[in-house]
Length: 297
Image 1: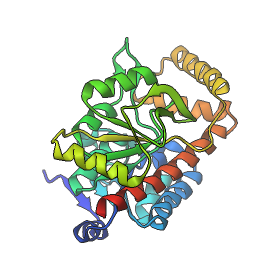
Image 2 (image 1 turned 90 degrees about the vertical axis):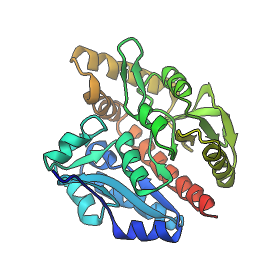
Image 3 (image 1 turned 180 degrees about the vertical axis):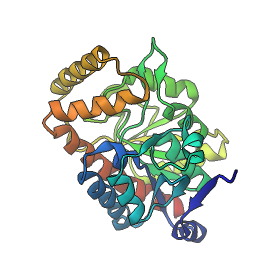
């Protein structure tokens, strides 16, 4: 059978010209926010990238095609239809069946790598839920496999952050703190965990990435960008503990766990977690654009 990967012509043209291009994921559209806020956020992130002088390339699966550079009709489709969530372990099956899906960090990395994009902006990376159950995200192995800069606000707060950090270290994936010596905490600005190195400008980040490529290390680079205004840590800890206990009681696990926990946190925080998530997504998109421009220079 013919398996299709479609790179939008405007993205191809931008890459050929040497313009700054930033990849964006689409699970934030399909599974991240309720309608119509999901579509509004998708458009806002693309506008943020453009305003910062780069070209946005949102990745998604549309009717059996892995698409790098969704157009507005594609964004609208993912925002207003019940679609799957595509990770690397189910991507081929979804494409073969002609389905549509939002792409996770791992699958967006795959699509962006195929297109030759070097910078990807997301919210928080996936990671280790429970080290004793081997429940960990495919994002981790993808970060080790694809050589892109991934701008994020650290690992999602619902995860075991210490285990996630150790797993990335084992995989050889560097975590660079942007203007911070500590790993970002997603819903809170920082955690207690130190990062491998610190960079204070987009040019420093670009230099670190170029050195990594020159050394043929082959992995991605996680750029940890603390959110400017986050939730109160003790409140977040209480909400997260409650959400996890409820998930365990209901038997939720695997790929269904993260969407449930994030949705439950939104309810328990009365929407404040969604406001923080939106803020960090926009801030990461802006920083990723600045880094992509520095790479072009």
